[in-house]
Amino acid sequence: MTRNIFAATLCGSTALFLIGCSPSAPDASGGAGHGEIATEDYERGPHRGRMLRQGEFALELTIFEDGVDPEFRLYPYLNGQPVDPSRVTASIELARLGGQVDRFAFAPQDDFLRGDGIVTEPHSFDVAVTASMPGMNGRWQYESHEGRTTISAEQAEAGGIAVSVTGPATLDETVEVYGEIELMPEGRAELRGWLPGRVVALNASIGDRVEAGQTLARITATDSLQTYSVTSPISGVVVERGATLNGPTGSEPLFVVADPSQLHAELFIYPGDLGSVATGQPVHVTSFDGGRSVESEIEFLSPMVDPASQRAIAHVEIPNEDGEWRPGERIRARIEVGQFDVPLAVRTDALQRFRDFTVVYARVDDTYEVRMLELGRQTPEWTEVLGGIDPGVTYVSENAFLITADVMKSGASHDH
Image (cartoon, rainbow, N blue to C red; front, side, top):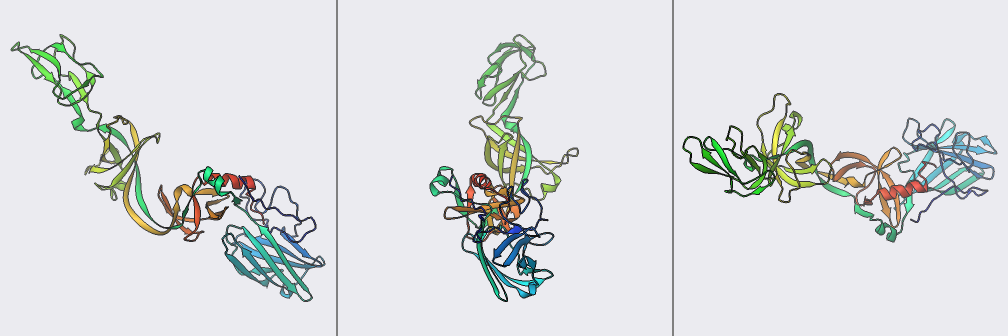
């Protein structure tokens, strides 16, 4: 992939600088500290900020975020000595990806000039600093980028990177439950002799497929010595055989026939969810390994709660013509119990981790950059966004992990 990696290039030039963050900010990268990189190739000032110099006039620029929202602080110097900040006038413009420009004015406070706004995340921008004092003027421009990379359209397409646009969405409110696959009562038949007697013929074994009305055994009655047939009332598979040739009928079933196409799921509904679950609600059933799934709905909700387990049972039909599902297996299910509209949402699959934030990647032309999000309600498909990105922004909605990998290669340190 093609990447734009921006680094500080001092070497006697004042044209390109990165801003230094407060040294007391937490280390979120796991490597170099928050506001530091592994190899320092630039000058830091007494407050661990980035030094901007122009002749005798200099500024030390930091983003301070120790116990406060991130804010700019400027420490002025003349001939290497601190200057009364009330003698200095300063402003900063931050040009962000996508065209937004943030502007900051400064007022003196203690021994520094304090910016009049919050430096919002991401701390990724092109910066213009202007400062003056009697007889001195300075202007500096530099790039300070983080969480940003450039990938060509051809490479993005080859990697399966897809995008969506932020906007309103309808979220399905769901309840997650567990359960088991069971045969329906009509999908199981126990075959017994009508009259006590002796089994004189057996026509089926375990595993045989039988049809409704097919004779599975013949029995000679003990009292009348008449022989009668035992037929299967359903089509299915012989899963048990208790009969033996020339043996007595006894009290146990001669055969048990099961129809594996007649299945339902028994879902376990606990008291905390009973108030929101009802018949007719859509249900998404998945196998425990996640390899199989089926869409259905609740066809029956028991009015009784088991005293021991304190759960009620909901029945959900499971179509099984292809035999994928087996009675007795455990399953997961997601019941849709309601819907709600939100003004701004992103695809849940788009969410990634960057430093201590949950982010998506905004795309502008071939450039991708993190957007730190404040999140609300979440479903497997959609996540409500409360802040951090605007409506109408194009963002990576599929295979966003590829962008994360490329950003990490480019260097993800929070360095200004």
